[in-house]
Image 1 (cartoon, rainbow, N blue to C red):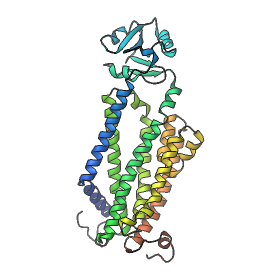
Image 2 (image 1 turned 120 degrees about the horizontal axis):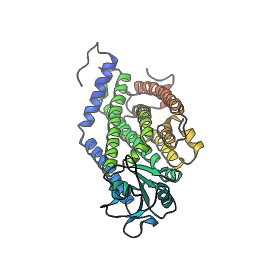
Image 3 (image 1 turned 90 degrees about the horizontal axis):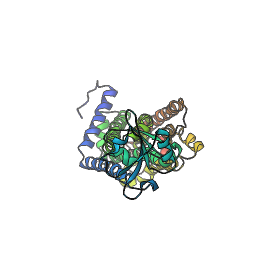
Image 4 (image 1 turned 135 degrees about the vertical axis):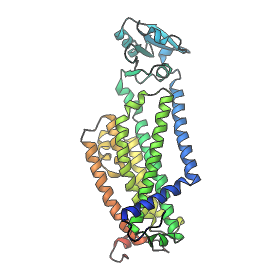
Length: 371
Protein backbone atom coordinates (compact mmCIF):
# COMPACT_ATOMS: atom_id res chain seq x y z
CA UNK A 1 0.00 0.00 0.00
CA UNK A 2 1.50 3.32 -1.06
CA UNK A 3 1.99 5.94 1.62
CA UNK A 4 -0.98 8.32 1.87
CA UNK A 5 -0.55 12.05 2.20
CA UNK A 6 -2.45 14.54 4.31
CA UNK A 7 -4.46 15.60 1.26
CA UNK A 8 -5.50 12.09 0.25
CA UNK A 9 -9.28 11.80 0.15
CA UNK A 10 -11.12 9.21 2.28
CA UNK A 11 -12.23 7.39 -0.88
CA UNK A 12 -8.64 7.14 -2.07
CA UNK A 13 -7.51 5.94 1.34
CA UNK A 14 -10.21 3.26 1.38
CA UNK A 15 -9.12 2.21 -2.11
CA UNK A 16 -5.53 1.86 -0.92
CA UNK A 17 -6.64 -0.31 2.02
CA UNK A 18 -8.78 -2.42 -0.31
CA UNK A 19 -5.83 -2.85 -2.64
CA UNK A 20 -3.72 -4.01 0.30
CA UNK A 21 -6.36 -6.56 1.30
CA UNK A 22 -6.64 -7.95 -2.23
CA UNK A 23 -2.91 -8.24 -2.87
CA UNK A 24 -2.30 -9.81 0.55
CA UNK A 25 -4.88 -12.52 -0.08
CA UNK A 26 -3.76 -13.20 -3.64
CA UNK A 27 -0.22 -13.73 -2.36
CA UNK A 28 -1.45 -16.19 0.23
CA UNK A 29 -0.73 -19.77 -0.82
CA UNK A 30 -3.55 -21.04 1.41
CA UNK A 31 -6.08 -18.80 -0.32
CA UNK A 32 -4.95 -19.78 -3.81
CA UNK A 33 -4.82 -23.51 -3.03
CA UNK A 34 -8.21 -23.53 -1.30
CA UNK A 35 -9.77 -21.67 -4.23
CA UNK A 36 -8.34 -24.16 -6.73
CA UNK A 37 -9.59 -27.10 -4.64
CA UNK A 38 -13.05 -25.51 -4.45
CA UNK A 39 -13.22 -24.97 -8.22
CA UNK A 40 -11.98 -28.48 -8.97
CA UNK A 41 -14.57 -29.85 -6.55
CA UNK A 42 -17.37 -28.00 -8.35
CA UNK A 43 -16.23 -29.26 -11.74
CA UNK A 44 -15.87 -32.81 -10.43
CA UNK A 45 -19.34 -32.68 -8.92
CA UNK A 46 -20.87 -31.64 -12.24
CA UNK A 47 -19.00 -34.35 -14.14
CA UNK A 48 -20.01 -37.03 -11.63
CA UNK A 49 -23.61 -35.84 -11.75
CA UNK A 50 -23.55 -36.04 -15.54
CA UNK A 51 -22.17 -39.57 -15.46
CA UNK A 52 -24.81 -40.68 -12.98
CA UNK A 53 -27.56 -39.08 -15.06
CA UNK A 54 -26.53 -41.19 -18.03
CA UNK A 55 -27.05 -44.43 -16.16
CA UNK A 56 -29.90 -46.59 -17.33
CA UNK A 57 -32.59 -46.01 -14.71
CA UNK A 58 -35.76 -45.80 -16.83
CA UNK A 59 -38.06 -48.79 -17.25
CA UNK A 60 -38.25 -47.86 -20.92
CA UNK A 61 -34.54 -48.34 -21.52
CA UNK A 62 -34.55 -52.10 -21.74
CA UNK A 63 -31.22 -53.66 -20.78
CA UNK A 64 -28.17 -51.80 -22.08
CA UNK A 65 -29.83 -49.23 -24.31
CA UNK A 66 -32.42 -46.50 -24.05
CA UNK A 67 -35.49 -46.66 -26.27
CA UNK A 68 -36.05 -43.37 -28.08
CA UNK A 69 -39.11 -42.57 -30.17
CA UNK A 70 -38.27 -41.11 -33.59
CA UNK A 71 -40.37 -39.80 -36.45
CA UNK A 72 -39.21 -40.19 -40.06
CA UNK A 73 -37.52 -36.76 -40.03
CA UNK A 74 -35.34 -37.59 -37.00
CA UNK A 75 -34.56 -41.27 -37.56
CA UNK A 76 -31.19 -40.34 -39.05
CA UNK A 77 -30.16 -38.29 -36.02
CA UNK A 78 -30.10 -41.40 -33.84
CA UNK A 79 -28.11 -43.55 -36.22
CA UNK A 80 -24.59 -44.32 -35.02
CA UNK A 81 -25.29 -43.32 -31.40
CA UNK A 82 -24.36 -46.24 -29.14
CA UNK A 83 -26.65 -47.00 -26.22
CA UNK A 84 -29.91 -45.96 -27.92
CA UNK A 85 -32.56 -47.93 -29.78
CA UNK A 86 -34.79 -46.12 -32.25
CA UNK A 87 -38.52 -46.77 -31.94
CA UNK A 88 -40.27 -45.46 -35.09
CA UNK A 89 -43.62 -43.71 -34.56
CA UNK A 90 -45.96 -42.00 -36.94
CA UNK A 91 -45.84 -38.38 -35.78
CA UNK A 92 -45.00 -35.96 -32.96
CA UNK A 93 -48.19 -36.73 -31.04
CA UNK A 94 -47.47 -40.44 -31.05
CA UNK A 95 -43.91 -39.78 -29.88
CA UNK A 96 -45.09 -37.66 -26.95
CA UNK A 97 -47.68 -40.28 -26.03
CA UNK A 98 -45.00 -42.98 -25.99
CA UNK A 99 -42.87 -40.85 -23.65
CA UNK A 100 -45.82 -40.10 -21.40
CA UNK A 101 -46.85 -43.75 -20.94
CA UNK A 102 -43.27 -44.95 -20.41
CA UNK A 103 -42.97 -46.99 -23.58
CA UNK A 104 -39.81 -45.04 -24.45
CA UNK A 105 -37.35 -43.07 -22.37
CA UNK A 106 -37.38 -40.03 -24.66
CA UNK A 107 -38.44 -38.77 -28.06
CA UNK A 108 -36.49 -37.05 -30.81
CA UNK A 109 -38.57 -34.57 -32.81
CA UNK A 110 -37.70 -32.34 -35.77
CA UNK A 111 -36.94 -28.67 -35.33
CA UNK A 112 -34.18 -26.06 -35.43
CA UNK A 113 -32.48 -27.22 -33.35
CA UNK A 114 -33.77 -30.77 -33.00
CA UNK A 115 -36.06 -31.24 -30.00
CA UNK A 116 -35.65 -33.81 -27.23
CA UNK A 117 -38.74 -34.71 -25.18
CA UNK A 118 -38.57 -36.18 -21.68
CA UNK A 119 -41.29 -37.16 -19.26
CA UNK A 120 -40.23 -36.02 -15.77
CA UNK A 121 -36.94 -34.29 -16.60
CA UNK A 122 -34.41 -33.67 -19.36
CA UNK A 123 -33.05 -37.00 -20.73
CA UNK A 124 -29.44 -36.14 -19.94
CA UNK A 125 -27.82 -39.13 -21.69
CA UNK A 126 -29.53 -38.40 -25.01
CA UNK A 127 -28.88 -34.66 -24.79
CA UNK A 128 -25.18 -35.30 -24.13
CA UNK A 129 -24.88 -37.84 -26.95
CA UNK A 130 -26.29 -35.64 -29.73
CA UNK A 131 -23.74 -33.73 -31.77
CA UNK A 132 -26.13 -30.81 -32.14
CA UNK A 133 -27.31 -29.11 -28.96
CA UNK A 134 -31.07 -29.82 -28.86
CA UNK A 135 -34.00 -27.94 -27.42
CA UNK A 136 -35.46 -29.78 -24.42
CA UNK A 137 -39.14 -30.27 -23.70
CA UNK A 138 -40.42 -31.82 -20.45
CA UNK A 139 -43.95 -33.21 -20.46
CA UNK A 140 -44.38 -33.05 -16.67
CA UNK A 141 -42.60 -29.85 -15.57
CA UNK A 142 -44.13 -30.00 -12.09
CA UNK A 143 -42.35 -33.29 -11.46
CA UNK A 144 -39.11 -31.77 -12.71
CA UNK A 145 -39.51 -28.79 -10.39
CA UNK A 146 -39.93 -31.12 -7.42
CA UNK A 147 -36.79 -33.01 -8.39
CA UNK A 148 -34.63 -29.90 -8.41
CA UNK A 149 -36.45 -27.99 -5.66
CA UNK A 150 -33.79 -29.11 -3.22
CA UNK A 151 -30.78 -28.74 -5.52
CA UNK A 152 -31.26 -25.12 -6.62
CA UNK A 153 -31.69 -23.69 -3.10
CA UNK A 154 -28.74 -25.80 -1.98
CA UNK A 155 -26.55 -24.39 -4.77
CA UNK A 156 -27.45 -20.75 -4.03
CA UNK A 157 -27.16 -21.25 -0.29
CA UNK A 158 -23.89 -23.17 -0.39
CA UNK A 159 -22.14 -20.62 -2.63
CA UNK A 160 -23.17 -17.71 -0.42
CA UNK A 161 -22.44 -19.54 2.83
CA UNK A 162 -18.99 -20.75 1.77
CA UNK A 163 -17.87 -17.36 0.48
CA UNK A 164 -19.26 -15.41 3.44
CA UNK A 165 -17.79 -17.73 6.04
CA UNK A 166 -14.37 -17.98 4.38
CA UNK A 167 -13.92 -14.26 3.81
CA UNK A 168 -15.75 -13.28 6.99
CA UNK A 169 -13.39 -15.37 9.06
CA UNK A 170 -10.46 -13.88 7.14
CA UNK A 171 -11.62 -10.33 7.90
CA UNK A 172 -12.06 -11.22 11.56
CA UNK A 173 -8.70 -12.95 11.87
CA UNK A 174 -6.80 -10.15 10.14
CA UNK A 175 -8.50 -7.53 12.31
CA UNK A 176 -7.60 -9.36 15.52
CA UNK A 177 -4.01 -10.04 14.44
CA UNK A 178 -3.55 -6.37 13.59
CA UNK A 179 -4.76 -5.46 17.07
CA UNK A 180 -2.66 -8.12 18.75
CA UNK A 181 0.53 -7.07 16.93
CA UNK A 182 -0.35 -3.36 17.20
CA UNK A 183 -0.09 -3.00 13.43
CA UNK A 184 -3.47 -1.29 13.55
CA UNK A 185 -1.93 1.60 15.50
CA UNK A 186 0.44 2.22 12.60
CA UNK A 187 -2.39 2.00 10.09
CA UNK A 188 -4.61 4.37 12.07
CA UNK A 189 -1.83 6.94 12.13
CA UNK A 190 -2.42 7.34 8.39
CA UNK A 191 -5.99 6.12 7.87
CA UNK A 192 -9.12 6.93 9.93
CA UNK A 193 -10.72 3.90 11.57
CA UNK A 194 -13.94 4.08 9.55
CA UNK A 195 -11.99 4.35 6.31
CA UNK A 196 -9.81 1.41 7.35
CA UNK A 197 -12.86 -0.77 7.95
CA UNK A 198 -14.46 0.40 4.69
CA UNK A 199 -11.32 -0.57 2.78
CA UNK A 200 -11.20 -3.99 4.42
CA UNK A 201 -14.84 -4.67 3.55
CA UNK A 202 -14.40 -3.37 -0.01
CA UNK A 203 -11.28 -5.45 -0.64
CA UNK A 204 -12.87 -8.60 0.73
CA UNK A 205 -16.02 -7.92 -1.32
CA UNK A 206 -13.96 -7.75 -4.51
CA UNK A 207 -12.25 -11.04 -3.67
CA UNK A 208 -15.53 -12.69 -2.70
CA UNK A 209 -17.28 -11.59 -5.87
CA UNK A 210 -14.30 -12.75 -7.91
CA UNK A 211 -14.33 -16.16 -6.27
CA UNK A 212 -18.09 -16.49 -6.74
CA UNK A 213 -17.72 -15.49 -10.41
CA UNK A 214 -14.99 -18.11 -10.84
CA UNK A 215 -17.28 -20.73 -9.32
CA UNK A 216 -20.07 -19.72 -11.71
CA UNK A 217 -17.77 -19.84 -14.74
CA UNK A 218 -16.45 -23.27 -13.80
CA UNK A 219 -20.01 -24.51 -13.31
CA UNK A 220 -21.06 -23.16 -16.72
CA UNK A 221 -17.98 -24.72 -18.31
CA UNK A 222 -18.74 -28.03 -16.65
CA UNK A 223 -22.35 -27.98 -17.87
CA UNK A 224 -21.13 -27.12 -21.37
CA UNK A 225 -18.51 -29.88 -21.48
CA UNK A 226 -20.93 -32.50 -20.17
CA UNK A 227 -23.70 -31.57 -22.58
CA UNK A 228 -26.04 -30.16 -19.97
CA UNK A 229 -26.51 -26.78 -21.65
CA UNK A 230 -30.25 -26.99 -21.15
CA UNK A 231 -29.80 -26.46 -17.40
CA UNK A 232 -28.22 -23.05 -17.99
CA UNK A 233 -31.40 -21.56 -19.40
CA UNK A 234 -33.39 -22.84 -16.41
CA UNK A 235 -31.44 -20.75 -13.89
CA UNK A 236 -30.34 -17.76 -16.00
CA UNK A 237 -32.58 -15.06 -14.49
CA UNK A 238 -32.35 -16.38 -10.89
CA UNK A 239 -28.54 -16.40 -11.12
CA UNK A 240 -28.54 -12.80 -12.35
CA UNK A 241 -30.60 -11.69 -9.36
CA UNK A 242 -28.48 -13.84 -7.06
CA UNK A 243 -25.35 -11.94 -8.08
CA UNK A 244 -26.95 -8.60 -7.20
CA UNK A 245 -28.24 -9.87 -3.85
CA UNK A 246 -24.90 -11.58 -3.20
CA UNK A 247 -22.92 -8.33 -3.43
CA UNK A 248 -25.17 -6.43 -1.02
CA UNK A 249 -25.54 -9.38 1.35
CA UNK A 250 -21.82 -9.98 1.53
CA UNK A 251 -21.17 -6.36 2.55
CA UNK A 252 -23.76 -6.83 5.31
CA UNK A 253 -21.96 -9.85 6.79
CA UNK A 254 -18.44 -8.52 6.16
CA UNK A 255 -19.17 -5.36 8.17
CA UNK A 256 -20.50 -7.44 11.05
CA UNK A 257 -17.41 -9.68 11.05
CA UNK A 258 -15.09 -6.65 11.11
CA UNK A 259 -16.97 -4.96 13.94
CA UNK A 260 -17.23 -8.13 16.01
CA UNK A 261 -13.51 -8.88 15.63
CA UNK A 262 -12.58 -5.39 16.81
CA UNK A 263 -14.06 -6.22 20.22
CA UNK A 264 -11.32 -8.75 21.09
CA UNK A 265 -7.53 -8.65 21.11
CA UNK A 266 -6.69 -12.35 20.76
CA UNK A 267 -7.68 -14.89 18.13
CA UNK A 268 -8.50 -17.38 20.90
CA UNK A 269 -11.20 -15.02 22.19
CA UNK A 270 -12.95 -14.58 18.85
CA UNK A 271 -15.40 -17.49 19.22
CA UNK A 272 -18.07 -15.78 21.35
CA UNK A 273 -18.19 -12.67 19.13
CA UNK A 274 -18.06 -14.50 15.80
CA UNK A 275 -20.50 -17.32 16.61
CA UNK A 276 -23.70 -15.16 16.53
CA UNK A 277 -22.82 -13.97 13.00
CA UNK A 278 -22.14 -17.54 11.91
CA UNK A 279 -25.54 -18.58 13.24
CA UNK A 280 -27.17 -15.71 11.31
CA UNK A 281 -25.74 -17.29 8.16
CA UNK A 282 -26.44 -20.93 8.97
CA UNK A 283 -30.08 -20.65 10.07
CA UNK A 284 -31.30 -18.98 6.82
CA UNK A 285 -29.27 -21.52 4.83
CA UNK A 286 -31.14 -24.48 6.33
CA UNK A 287 -34.50 -22.71 6.31
CA UNK A 288 -34.24 -21.94 2.59
CA UNK A 289 -33.13 -25.49 1.71
CA UNK A 290 -35.72 -27.36 3.74
CA UNK A 291 -38.45 -24.76 3.48
CA UNK A 292 -38.42 -24.27 -0.28
CA UNK A 293 -41.60 -26.33 -0.53
CA UNK A 294 -43.53 -23.83 1.61
CA UNK A 295 -44.58 -20.71 -0.35
CA UNK A 296 -45.48 -18.84 2.85
CA UNK A 297 -42.13 -19.51 4.53
CA UNK A 298 -40.20 -18.67 1.37
CA UNK A 299 -42.08 -15.39 1.01
CA UNK A 300 -41.08 -14.42 4.53
CA UNK A 301 -37.46 -15.51 4.04
CA UNK A 302 -37.20 -13.52 0.81
CA UNK A 303 -37.79 -10.29 2.75
CA UNK A 304 -35.64 -11.05 5.82
CA UNK A 305 -32.26 -9.39 5.07
CA UNK A 306 -30.12 -12.30 6.29
CA UNK A 307 -31.96 -14.86 4.14
CA UNK A 308 -33.09 -12.71 1.18
CA UNK A 309 -29.83 -13.39 -0.69
CA UNK A 310 -30.87 -17.04 -1.00
CA UNK A 311 -34.63 -16.85 -0.60
CA UNK A 312 -35.57 -14.38 -3.33
CA UNK A 313 -33.53 -16.00 -6.18
CA UNK A 314 -35.08 -19.35 -5.25
CA UNK A 315 -38.57 -17.87 -5.45
CA UNK A 316 -37.71 -16.36 -8.84
CA UNK A 317 -36.56 -19.79 -10.03
CA UNK A 318 -39.76 -21.43 -8.80
CA UNK A 319 -41.85 -18.71 -10.46
CA UNK A 320 -43.47 -17.67 -7.17
CA UNK A 321 -42.31 -14.01 -7.16
CA UNK A 322 -44.10 -11.11 -8.82
CA UNK A 323 -41.96 -8.80 -10.97
CA UNK A 324 -41.76 -6.11 -8.26
CA UNK A 325 -40.85 -8.40 -5.37
CA UNK A 326 -37.11 -8.77 -6.11
CA UNK A 327 -36.82 -4.98 -6.27
CA UNK A 328 -38.68 -4.52 -2.99
CA UNK A 329 -36.61 -7.22 -1.30
CA UNK A 330 -33.38 -5.67 -2.59
CA UNK A 331 -34.40 -2.25 -1.23
CA UNK A 332 -35.02 -3.80 2.21
CA UNK A 333 -31.67 -5.60 2.08
CA UNK A 334 -29.80 -2.48 0.94
CA UNK A 335 -31.38 -0.30 3.63
CA UNK A 336 -30.54 -2.87 6.30
CA UNK A 337 -26.99 -3.16 5.01
CA UNK A 338 -26.52 0.61 5.12
CA UNK A 339 -27.73 0.74 8.71
CA UNK A 340 -25.59 -2.21 9.81
CA UNK A 341 -22.49 -0.78 8.08
CA UNK A 342 -22.97 2.55 9.89
CA UNK A 343 -23.36 0.78 13.24
CA UNK A 344 -20.41 -1.53 12.54
CA UNK A 345 -18.21 1.45 11.65
CA UNK A 346 -19.08 3.05 15.00
CA UNK A 347 -18.24 -0.14 16.89
CA UNK A 348 -15.00 -0.62 14.96
CA UNK A 349 -13.91 2.99 15.50
CA UNK A 350 -14.52 2.88 19.25
CA UNK A 351 -13.03 -0.53 19.98
CA UNK A 352 -10.24 -1.29 17.51
CA UNK A 353 -7.60 0.43 19.65
CA UNK A 354 -8.81 -1.03 22.95
CA UNK A 355 -6.65 -3.97 23.95
CA UNK A 356 -6.75 -6.42 26.82
CA UNK A 357 -10.05 -7.93 27.94
CA UNK A 358 -12.94 -8.33 25.54
CA UNK A 359 -14.84 -5.09 24.98
CA UNK A 360 -18.58 -5.39 25.63
CA UNK A 361 -20.84 -4.25 22.81
CA UNK A 362 -23.12 -2.43 25.25
CA UNK A 363 -20.15 -0.51 26.60
CA UNK A 364 -19.06 0.51 23.11
CA UNK A 365 -22.51 1.75 22.16
CA UNK A 366 -23.28 3.28 25.57
CA UNK A 367 -22.44 6.66 26.94
CA UNK A 368 -19.24 5.38 28.52
CA UNK A 369 -17.85 4.39 25.10
CA UNK A 370 -14.60 6.06 24.23
CA UNK A 371 -14.91 8.22 21.19
